[in-house]
Image (tube, rainbow over all chains, first blue to last red; front, top):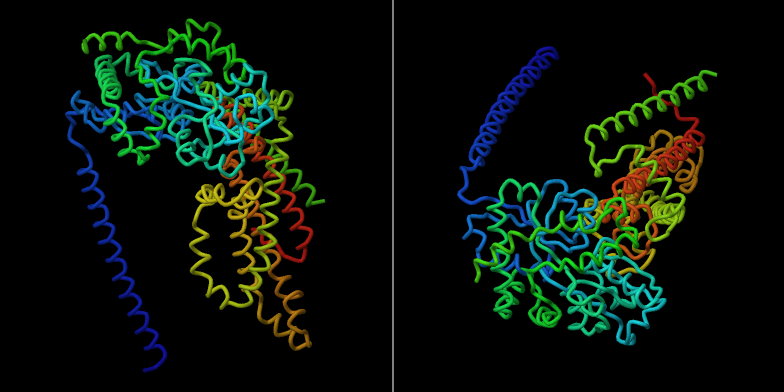
Length: 343
Length: 261
């Protein structure tokens, strides 16, 4: 075979291969498009009987136990609600997500809720999730709050209620602390490593240090401000305006769960342990420091606001009138209605 | 003369695009009209407040900038000091790279942020930041060094051998010199990645100063304008460092012909 013939043969093979490749590509694209179309049609859900509600909460935060209990028991579904769990690491990212329209309702600390509302977030607090429930944990050699002068104290974030409270302690006792911010779950480890002399955190992250013999509690949030509002249950203003009956159902589920926690502590602890993986002994350790009251302590919120302004976290311009602000932030009319149904 | 005219034209064009960008941004912020979407004027106001008063905890803007720059430079320097020699060895001895590929390549794909929990458990203080930034900056430097070494023209090596050059001379005067432009490019990319890691690194917490920390702090307070100040400062400092690198490259590699169409 001469060179020309050989070249022609190779060219024909190449062209045949290319035709084959072209045909293969076309078939592949048709198959892929069909599959995609199939999944799209399959994915289009039929109208649900349950109303989906996106509920925010904090990961392993015992303050939000009402949500864990209600979810576990299926009480949302009993009210025709499909709860969509939206988990966050701490309060401000949850508030950012809420502001972005990612949430319909949720559980969060009252200070992040105040800050978010002051900045223009459209949320309304409809019930309390818990009162108190935080503590200052210190190294074993530190025996009292006064020994925290010139010491390093960790907090779970500048926008947290715990940060606000530690600064209230500073002012109350005329102390100077070196306050540092860390991730809430790292604080017991950092105390153990000696990077902080003490930390303030929400339960059960104080109980963890005690159970592991890393530190001890020298001051609780009850000592700082008795019966203070901690976490709240909120809904969006839009949801409250457009679907008040749905909000009523959400509040009903919340109150039912809170009453269950009050009346069945052992079972509530077990549910929280199952859903979060937190050991029962840790949950039991912090239980006595929790106050499971679903009534909002508005007076304590009024006390927090001037501290937040003083600490530079909100400005006077944002809250020119505290009473008006509280009226726009807290609305417990539905809670009062719901409570009557429980007798 | 031609070069100066081009530089002048480029500067003018850049200035014009910056002005257009700012005007568009201001227009968009007026349209959106939300406290969570500040315009350039809000950001400038926030910048001035931070500059004059410091942040909410009284830490000055200069402290934030110094803290971040020092962390990035330390982590980046470590990446260069480890990446270049390792890259030279792996480039010259392909079996070395082949033998450690199963460890190196998976490590390359793990994002620096994923190392944060380990960094907290195993290290303390500055070492944590350096680890995260090193992880970001190391691989571009390493891989570009390897590529630069491996793309050395073998004809040059042969010519050197013919003229009696020993191994050391070949490596330093031919291989390394040939690889330098690639190494520099890798360093520039590594520095950029290092800056991108600073927010992740400073998420660890503890030290109160740092631009990444400033962004996170004001994020927690939903003060978007101050957050943007932190972001812009990172961008501007990154740009200045990048420009410094480019100038250095242009001076060092004048012999390299640039292709323009």
